[in-house]
Image (cartoon, rainbow, N blue to C red; front, side, top):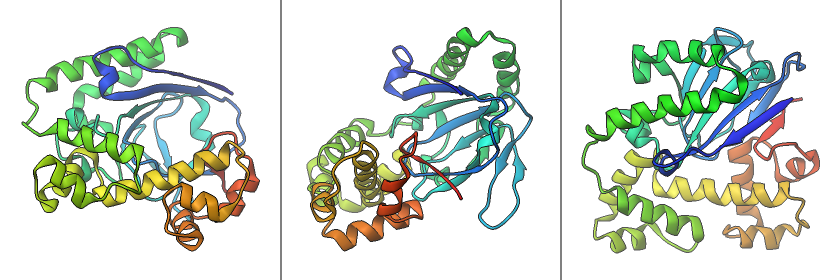
Length: 274
């Protein structure tokens, strides 16, 4: 398997966390559980003219070959067969708003055909990427995103994006210690108004976002092989107690933390479905 990633140059680096590609021809087909991190992605299948939808307890079903995958607050299941030739874009938590053309929460917990989200002009993107040598594909995708950024920058509806970014930074440092009410007061808004703007710009309410970040902090520690002292880990990650940690971990991932810790997965947010 080949896996590469790259952070784009300015000005896209303010909005896009990472471009990535993977090529795994002949990989054994299996299902994988993808854990939620709250960020929006664009995914393009360059091998086949569809991506697979993998509902639990049902056969795979074809979807569009290029998708906007909204920020998730619960796991989803994918097929490893789609990794034969795949590219993607991971947006910063508040980065997709400029590209969305709509409130970001309208994309949350769903996958939408890229053409439906961004229009018919996206039809040729997959063809261009397929025709581009592997070592130039990142530049091709970055050029496409930069053109869309230039087009949308002048149309961007006025939003207090600076306050949302400030809130994300504060929540990122101490997701368990900064309350939504205190954050709203620091921006000068009501709690209701702050939650509305945050949801429209990020895709989740502040409370859900902080829950996802606590969960992701635990995932990173477990994947790194941290010594597991469950009660201490629960408190270090901002959960009320070990029971709260266990319930939240299963709610977001579909498995318990002990099972995840024992799996020793290659990627922190991928779990093979047995």
